[in-house]
Amino acid sequence: MKSKTITLEALRSRFTDGMTIMVGGFMGVGAPSSLVRALIDSGARSLTLMSSDTAKVDTGVGPLIASGQVAKLYASHIGTNPETGRRMLAGELQVEMVPQGTFAERIRCGGGGLGGVLTPTGIGTVVEEGKQKISVNGRVFLLETPLRADVALLKARVADRSGNLVFERSARNFNPLMALAADLVVVECDQLVETGTIDPEHVVTPGAVVDLIYCGAIA
Image (cartoon, rainbow, N blue to C red; front, side, top):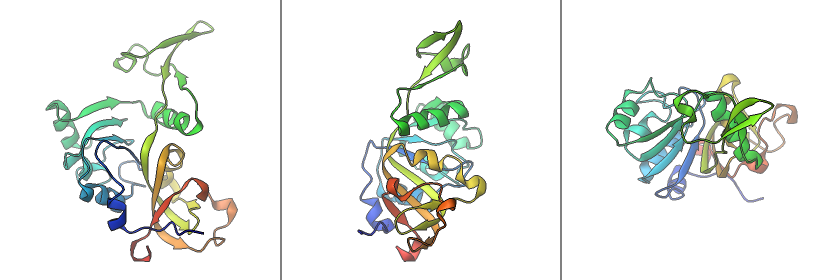
């Protein structure tokens, strides 16, 4: 079997201008900080970023926002990172705010090959602007379209060499959903073990959807 491990130097060459990138994590928890740094160091620009939030200036995807490489952002909130707000107000960053449950379901649709999800969340607010409304049994819903990415950058506690993943409690967050909704899935792990070491009952994300693994000096 071809090795899935990769160095950060080799990974940098995979990033190009204009890519859409999903990054796991919630307020930096479960975010792949080394992979984010590799993306920054690649110099790729005009990126579209899909992330639950932008954490803080120096955590999670915060450094990527501060680097000015992101042109468009899909997120549920940005209030903890003043640099995100500054860039948005200055017209340097286009931001689409997505309610967090809707954000998760749009990614799930992208991973499942679905055409979208109907939700009442956002009706009567700015969230509904420009979106199709559909009436079902007398109730109005917004049609929220799928989200997919060119690359997903994820974080796991343990990975085996086949790419089967185990997450650390709440650090799981959006990582498993994003693993299904990107063309290239790259995982940063704290521990890399041999295939067959992980109890199948503990595997959350199967290796079949994981393309590349980074685990420090081991890679």
